[in-house]
Structure formats: C-alpha cells, structure tokens
Length: 101
Image (cartoon, rainbow, N blue to C red; front, side, top):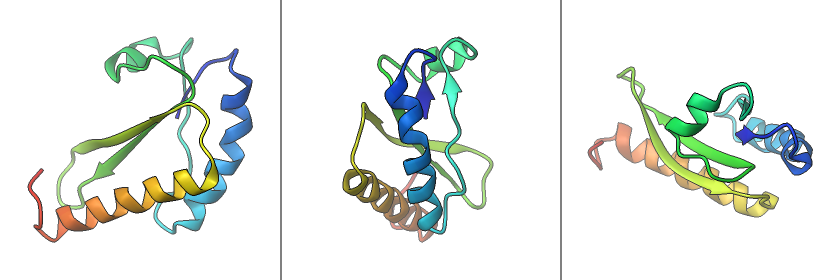
C-alpha cells in the first residue's frame, strides 16, 4: 500500500487491510511504502494518488512478481475482499497453467 505522511485515510485503513488480508489465509500483512521515504518506488509503480494498493502475484516456481491490479483511494471491505479473491484466482490459474504470464 502506497501512503503519504499527510494522508490520514491511508493510516486509518491499514488495520482494516491487515485484518482482511490475514483472514484470506494467504497474505500476511500490508507493506506500506511512504511517498517521502521511497519516492523512487512510487515513481516506478506510477503512483498518482494515495492511498494506492498494488496487488502483486508471486509465482511459486519463479522469482518474479506480477503487478496484477491496483486500487486507488479508500475502499470498503467488500470491494477489497472481491479484489483479493480475483487476485487469488489469477494466481491459481497461473500456477495451474490456465494462463501464461
């Protein structure tokens, strides 16, 4: 999750996101990247607004990651859960050879 030090909604949403991701059984925590501490990473990912969540799929047999999707702004629990499920389905399809990366 990309955040800014001036973005109160960013910091307010981190506990909710950690809880939802932990409940998924796959994700362990939200990694926060702050605009003032890591401007190069923000630029690399093309971050234009805060908060921004970038979902990445780590392939189990390779060392690369796939930026699967992103969400910009505050989102509710249902929307976040739907996006996590889509990401997990994509990862399963990738691992089962149903799609090519």
